[in-house]
Length: 399
Ligand SMILES: *Cc1c(COP(=O)(O)O)cnc(C)c1O
Image (cartoon, rainbow, N blue to C red; front, side, top):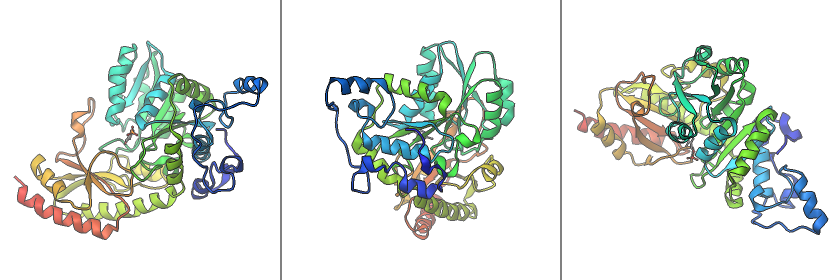
């Protein structure tokens, strides 16, 4: 959806008011669930009129959405200053794949950060390769030196900041500046920060992608992706999504919109609790490096301070003298932290992570095994007590 006039409001206000057009909500507060494949027209003239425009906001056919999806997309567009529109996808991975497909052609090369989310790597290394597109990886701390990697075939740069598992904060503005000067398109996986903590387009990014599954939905009960871009790439992004038949269900859009209303207050609490727990962990004798962008251990911490409006609730830390078995004992002993994939929900999670398995051009600065924590909305004192108890089990299992 195109930008509407609430673009000047503060993010918390935008999250509350975004997309709530009276014609979509009727007399209730949230846009209801408009289920439908067929949209009925008044007459043949009306039907023909419908074919003329490819904008959201008009009934056409279920694959183009209904007010439930349009409202969510409009709210996300409003929260990203400089945006022309937002497309919704049935998962974060679909959002990333479809964004890349919107901009690359056979013969192109793309550059990806070595700290990429593993499914992004796999899409590039397997699927795009089959289409004759090559992928090359770069050091997430490369900054403006990325220009040295640009070749005649380089079409796009896929960034992720902070990176998956090891949380390197990239110099996104410097990378975007170098890319723009060379006519190269920049895409950013902005799932960790969302536009609330990192307004991507304002920092020079062309295409900002998020797994809405995480903080937008916020309740671990819906899968969704969202991509927001400025006017230059909006048509290509939209056409590609439509050609690939991407659509989210109105029920899922409803739940995501419901999550969005509380995004600001949730993110601020995730940040406060994660900050407290990250500092507590840093002071523990068992813990080596803590990869939380708001802490100096994290590569790119200075860039985080310069560019970000906050630090969300996901980070990893090193068990400096542990091994795989003692790490498992630590995680198994946790009672308030679930063991499972995904993150960004209200419940805390713990996961063993091994970034070395995925990387090809750089190494993590950690030598001991890593644990990734999603800090949920429980009381941080209870979470700390749980972690303290788990360290006792860790000691008993240590080599
Ligand atoms: C989870 C995640 C995704 C993928 O989102 P799904 O909705 O699970 O497909 C993409 N990027 C990052 C950084 C993620 O953590």
